[in-house]
Amino acid sequence: MKMTTEEAFVKVLQRHGIEHVFGIIGSAFMPISDIFPAAGITFWDCAHEGSGGMMADGYTRASGKMAMMIAQNGPGITNFVTAVKTAYWNHSPLLLVTPQAANKTIGQGGFQEVEQMALFKDMVAYQEEVRDPSRIAEVLTRVIAQAKRHSAPAQINVPRDLFTQVIDIELPPILSFERAGGGAEAIAQAAALLSKAKFPVILNGAGVVLSPGGIEASKALAETLDAPVCCGYQHNDAFPGTHPLFAGPLGYNGNKAGMQLIAKADVVLALGTRLNPFSTLPGYGIDYWPKQAAIIQVDMNPNRIGLTKAISVGIVGDAAKVAKAIHAQLAPNAGDTDRAARKATIAQTKSAWAQELTSMDHEQDDPGTTWNERARKAKPDWMSPRKAWRAITAALPRNAIISSDIGNNCAIGNAYPTFDEGRKYLAPGLFGPCGYGLPSVVGAKIACPNVPVVGFSGDGAFGIAVTELTAIGRKEWPAITMIVFRNYQWGAEKRNSTLWYDDNFVGTELDEQVSYAGIAKACGLQGVQAFTMDELTKALAKAIDDQMKHGKTTLIEAMINQELGEPFRRDAMKKPVKVAGIDKADMKPQVVG
Ligand SMILES: Cc1ncc(C[n+]2csc(CCOP(=O)(O)OP(=O)(O)O)c2C)c(N)n1
Ligand SMILES: [Mg+2]
Image (cartoon, rainbow, N blue to C red; front, side, top):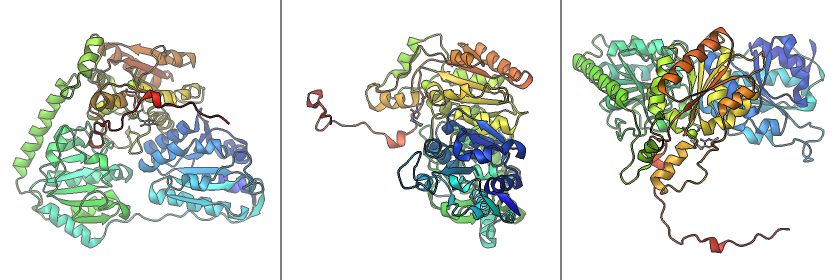
């Protein structure tokens, strides 16, 4: 059939149901964006491609549907790098389209030219360049299939002069196949280990959220075994928070009960998780990873099995399928050993942690340091981070999709909100970029217009994404709610200065003249400041109402004191020593020219 290359491209997108595209408009791809409206594809014209990419990630994580990213060759595309690697570790199947400098001039070092394949080599699960106009549909179909197969971004690189050409091709069929369900022997071994375990614990990772029916399957297994279910770091929505067996997120600022329970495990079923390093690092001073336990690890990517921890059984497969298969093979008396005692331990451990969490108001200083004490004294009437989180939890709708960001206040929130379903918690993940909180919920709202969304960021991280306020007020963009923790400091990094650098605050202070609520208003959005717990709860309730009933976006600046919680990397930090010493007098004038 005769068609243009851009028609072929858009027809393949349509076949795969790819309806939402994020980026900034550019001449390199105008042949395809020009026909988006006719195709039923929406182009979301963001303010910076870095945030646009995170919107695409938020869209895909909230809906499970693939989104596309596109930008101008060269500087538009380089702006995507951070977002694509972020999506990679969030396991988001995204389509990255990189229009390339034209074949006619490439290599002459001309305009907007950069090695786009090399640029994303370590960012995507698969990449391919289109070599000939007649192959555009073939390559695009394969790239989409690879993104799905690896549950990660995949890139198609298209020299821009390949558009606007007439080709004669048949559109290729969609490439898809069923996910693996685990090897028979490994499943039998896992079922045998779990059946006779005295203290089985399940650890749910992202794979449980991504796999259709994964949470249900893990729940059925947990209930049969009376096994507590922990969640991997930043995968807090991988098990229902109200379930009696829920044991919450492991790792930094996570659920202490979960850590205490998994420490007792003799068998761990690590389901749909690569056991990312942050999911097993000590928390609250507890080195909880059960080194003596038999570990069964289930991941659809065999390269990640046994990568971070010694394991007893590795199973390559989809979380739901494997959980169901193991369940079907459990012995009739599985879980009976010490069942009553285990149930009692789970209930007691959970209730003790719940009480402790409600009574936690302030952050601790390490011996010999006094930052938190000084921070409390400096602003005695201001909310502490934990008080702000309690005020937020009081107004947060149970069905909300929320985001998190990289920062101390967002991290302190790790143990607070819980979820009834998956695809509700959008944390920046293990690439750890500041600036994820706003764009990810914008994408999630585009995916789920009838669900309330609330974004969270620290004030430094928010500054990276603040430009998007100039984009999201346009009438076609949906309303969202954003909470910014306003402590006028890059707190998470400042925490390191208080602990290991004698309060030598280099680059940690933010400008106190800036009002984010004011910037929101200047962009035609609502902006409010909340100074007390009551004001914060009320502001959030009103913002949700405005979002859902009146289509209005609100930015809430939660004004908090400068207390700082646990550092991110206690494991990686140490106090530096002076050996040669550094002296200003050694600075020489620079020779120019
Ligand atoms: C893009 C990027 N730049 C820098 C960092 C390093 N970093 C991690 S946390 C943090 C401070 C975050 O400060 P803020 O957003 O104000 O939150 P707070 O810690 O004060 O709650 C920084 C700079 C990062 N993770 N990502
Ligand atoms: Mg801050």
